Image (cartoon, rainbow, N blue to C red):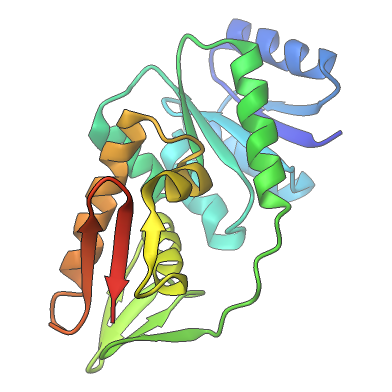
Length: 225
């Protein structure tokens, strides 16, 4: 069974979640704060990370940012009582894969973990380092857009979304498909987050009028190049 890294500063909740996951066959590494969690991550390279957002020493968002500097693929699930759109968007920007609001059921957590692990096993064909998008050069591994010597740094989630739009360029990228792929489900709340990311990509690409991301009503988006 997969090895999970669980980071939760509320000890009683952490023990309940750890014991429940271990009873379902998972191997669980437990940490009570973000710094300890990051140390365990580097030492053990777990298959997935489940982290509280509000933690001492190093919060969950900062932890995700550190992890993404060395591992772009390991699934990260945030546990939090905070559910404002800005918090959710920030979590996804930093490379989180899912967001579970407290209180939550262990069954729901396990379903989400398994879905992310299964999706992570899907091997995508390797893409060239630089992808041409009109006058822009999109450096996917480095998460940057370049135009006339000017570079635009991108978040992990922005780069993943633009890559999928590029792969489907001049064709419709279905909204529900990208939500399931990058956000884990196609709920209304995640849909609002996706809209924010699309708006940001349009702003990044605005200096080439031949490049557009258009809405296809009721279906999704199309990157026109």
